[in-house]
Image (cartoon, rainbow, N blue to C red):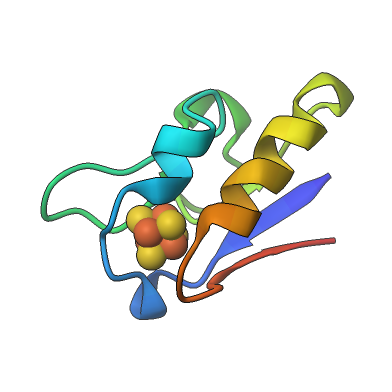
Length: 71
Ligand code: SF4
């Protein structure tokens, strides 16, 4: 599953990484990114394996400003 973070809209709250650290990385003062293992085009875009789809979806749902999309 493809996951994309609109980093311009990220408010650096860290919720996605808290919900699913296997897929998302977000620290103090940093825009959220996809962990290196699953990155594709850029730190904001990744391809998540089937066994982590539920985890990634939890991260998507946790985002208060809804800047993470899947497809
Ligand atoms: S949950 Fe959304 S706003 Fe918060 S760090 Fe992740 S992408 Fe950014």
